[in-house]
Amino acid sequence: MLQLLRSRLRRALLVILGVSLFAFMIVHLTGDPATLMLPLDATSEEVEAFREAMGLNDPLWQQYLRWLGRAVRGDFGLSLRHQQPALTLILERMPATIELTLAALGVAICTGIPLGVWMASRRGSWSAFAGSIFGLLGQAMPVFWLALMLQLVFGLLIPVFPLTGRGSFKQLVMPAIALGFYSTATIMRLLQSHMIEVLQQDYIRTARSKGLSRALVILKHALRNALLPVVTVIGLQLGVLLGGAVITENIFAWPGVGRLLVQAINNRDIPLVQAGVFVIAVSIVIINLITDLLYTWLDPRIRLEG
Image (cartoon, rainbow, N blue to C red):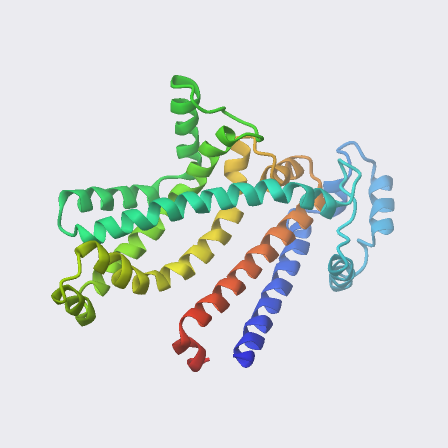
């Protein structure tokens, strides 16, 4: 188990190193960092002086190692717009993003698992067919379109929930549904397929032959074994939701990291963009690592193979 843990940690560190390179290269892939950070009316002398002061005339690999050394210590520089440490600004917005992500995941779990069980137990019925259509729509429907439709229907036509903002439970409902809808469909369809496979196993027939009720067989015997692959998907979906919150936060004016990043891009605030991309990417890597280890702990066969 320790050998497997070390292997997973090495892979995670390699991914984080790649993420750091990507976050650094964002500046150079979008143009000259000096012209991006300075005002449009800056003179050539001011641009050259800025390049010299920031070390932008050094070879690219030296700039990367210098930036990486500061990033490891949590120093991503000052935000050009806010004149505050970029990492501090990102961490201040993280609670809002985590709140929205967990709420969306809660919607996905509390909706997707019951629907998956229902569809598997009603295989071949009209309700299962309707659930399949719902799953296809959920995975095909763009998040931004669903968010706008929710605002139109439940924010304007039937004003039940506030259109934007954060602070109350009502303001959380529509963003959580919009963000979690895709994950709901993913969990539902995966659980349905595994439940159908499990329900055909011999031990399920044995349980039924003993006179156990249909509900008890499904919930106690079938669901427990079908949930194992769903655990992995839930962990992966948490990372997907964390990264996908950018669109939802901007549509609902949710004050999270995603909205801050879009504002930073519009303001050409490169240090803030780099810090945001790095923090979100590292968070996703850590979530995936924990999910991988959890799945290994739940399934001893993987532990033995590792």
